[in-house]
Length: 522
Image 1 (cartoon, one colour):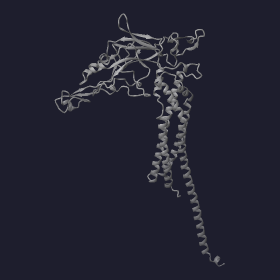
Image 2: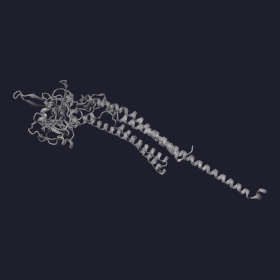
Image 3: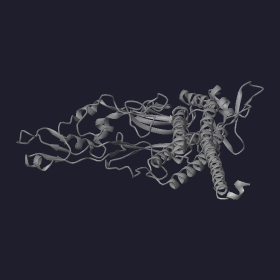
Image 4: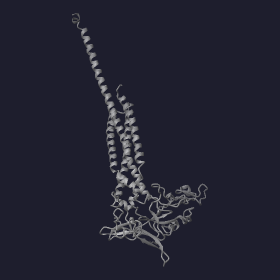
């Protein structure tokens, strides 16, 4: 085969096509095998965030006569914070042409009036920014947290069997006191420092016998873990995604109202749209949205001024108060009696490692994309060289750079695979997948899904390594083939030169023999 620069470019071009196909295969494989099949970590992050919260130690209902409030103010006493606040989404600007004399414009139009509409007698309706909702039945719900505590540093008591009573007893370390349930259900008993206040584990409303009014009852000895959140929510429990707000389905729509006013819980985690763990506060009287809008930032008056808006509909939408305790973690999984205890702090590490594995997978995907792009650029430059619009030196420089770049990127990919294996704690994930350590089914399922993913990593790593090795092998093949043909060309040129030199010498000898007659005669 003749070796020319053009022939070399064509051979390299063909092999690069195969490499591009392999690069695309690597990218798609990583995208679907690593990224797309990743277990849903969002719920694990939710649980981690809840465990980091300080428990609620006190709740007060503060009367509020001023309906003006915003998202930045705290109407609660010092050391207290608002337990719950919502928002009215507001509405966009509109153009009211209900009194226009021009038949071309009528009714309500979304967007500010233009000059023609204004001339026809239409009037602008200003947009309304979101407004804070902090007052419920004339009161702010204020809570006090112990921010020095979290579920990570709340101690569990030591459970031992009393030989005389044959009952299990809970005992805290020296300097700590026992909080939580008074009965034998030690799942919900905790130890806090003696100078600390026991966290609340339940609230409810009861009718006072003397005043016949509803009063708040705070409890710290129930079979629940400490309360960490109180939320006033419409229709049902709060959404599993914090940025979303639960709303009554099929609310009457209005042209100017912003979409989030109707959207509700649209995002699911593990097929769950509302946050598990929230339960309705017993005895709390539901509040109509009509009343809430009437006592917060004059929202009701603003809606009454809107053209074609039915404010009466809000009498049919109701809010309830929900409370949430720490996500449950079984004492049996936490206990030192277990040969392999898993504490919430261990889960914190597992979740952090899982997040790191996910980031490695995303980086691996990026490397696959970049390698594929580098092959495509190399193909482009080779093609330009073949049609003689690119200098040969530029082509050589590009190929050399791409060789080194691909090698470095492949080594980086190998390093990522190694660290993914290192951070995949198979022993812990296996334990969590086999032991239901929580009464939260979604949390247990998240750990099972995580373990399945970790188990599948080895096979996925093999496929990834094979694809990377094939790409490196093709790079070496391109070099070896081009070197071989270059060597053959050089060898052929040398042989051709020797033959030409020999022919020249023979011709010279023949010429010499013709020009020396004496030698011929003798």
